Length: 163
Ligand code: GDP
Ligand code: MG
Image 1 (cartoon, rainbow, N blue to C red):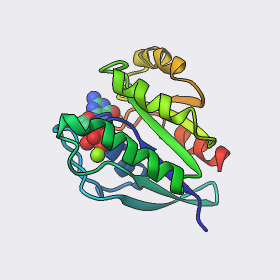
Image 2: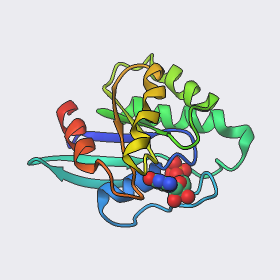
Image 3: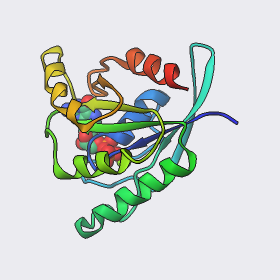
Image 4: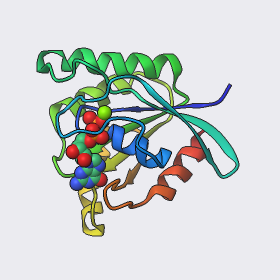
């Protein structure tokens, strides 16, 4: 089977943006309103002669703030069931929020490789902002910007190394 790379993280960190950026086209819906991703989206990626599927897990109903924990549990369940590598996305602009810590806590119990993706590092000086997320725990940290197209090949290299 093709290895599965599952993107998780709280709403609005840029999961769907990362998915589209890696896919090279707009497949998933990106919106300023948190939680606008309708289905699980899958894209077959080729990198360094390897194939893997990237999965965007964002779902409906995330706008309901009462259900954020449910949403995270849903993403974690997809990761447990199907991920070979987990991309845990955080946002350097907003900084760390309690929900990021909630995701990190759930991930600690899962014995799968995790890549921590610090998105919205729109300029090189913002890469240092990403360091605050090291304490979320395991996994290699990669600062990226989908908006400014920063560090895409670094991210793909790190993913491919963990397959
Ligand atoms: P999701 O809820 O995690 O899937 O997040 P989305 O991909 O829908 O993105 C949420 C918001 O973040 C949108 O307004 C995006 O345009 C914005 N966004 C995504 N990537 C970047 C980035 O690299 N830099 C900045 N500044 N904004 C971004
Ligand atoms: Mg989304």
